[in-house]
Image 1 (cartoon, helix red, strand yellow):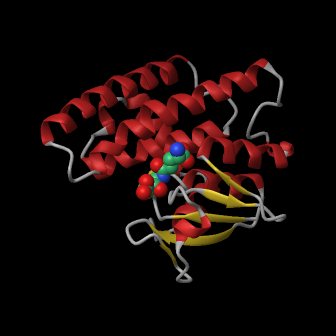
Image 2: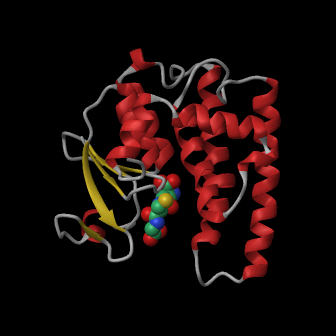
Image 3: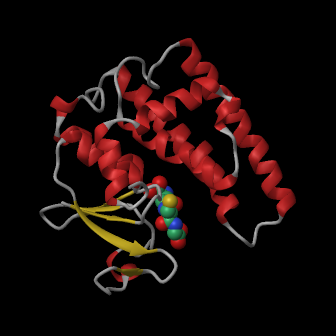
Amino acid sequence: MKLFFSPGACSLSPHIVMREAGFEPELEQVDLKTKRTKSGADYTAVNPKGQVPMLVLDDGQKLTEGPAIVQYLADRKPEAKLAPSNGSFERYRLQEWLNFVTSELHKGFSPLFNPAVPEEYKRMVKETLADRFAYLDRHLGAGGPFLMGSQFTVADAYCFVITSWSKYQKIDLGQWPNLKAYVDRIAARPKVQEAMKREGLIK
Ligand SMILES: N[C@@H](CCC(=O)N[C@@H](CS)C(=O)NCC(=O)O)C(=O)O
């Protein structure tokens, strides 16, 4: 299986999951500005969406959309317990979290990385994100240490990656101590460190 990624982008989530699940990830870097892969291929010809992540399976099938990819990876290695089993109520809980991260946090952050977006709108976007972070902080304060309780799941990998973008936007996570502790806890996981090193995000 090959994962198309861009350093520090949302593709870090399936990259972490691959390592947590025990796969040896084959990776191909994409330049999201030029839409070229590191080997020089036109990425839009490989993936018409032009976005990362994309997973290419051993039989050549292509899977996009981070929440779908991480569930596929988790289901390939059930022994890693990265997702509750299909059909259980807890699986819907996981999907509830993945959807929250993708629609409220991930796409909540996107305008902040767009230089064409006016500063006034960015201020409003940051206020909305602060509400979402406050919700997460309360949730983690009441339970934890992970989104679904004691077990680290693919939703935590995704939530960690997106919440960590705060550092690029001068959003101080220290305002939400439970959330800050959660991000630090996940950052310290050996497989997360491995993935971040491989992407050149840490030494
Ligand atoms: N809906 C997609 C969105 C993926 C996405 O937004 N990827 C960003 C990087 S974090 C990207 O490729 N941006 C470049 C672009 O949209 O042209 C998913 O959840 O996987």
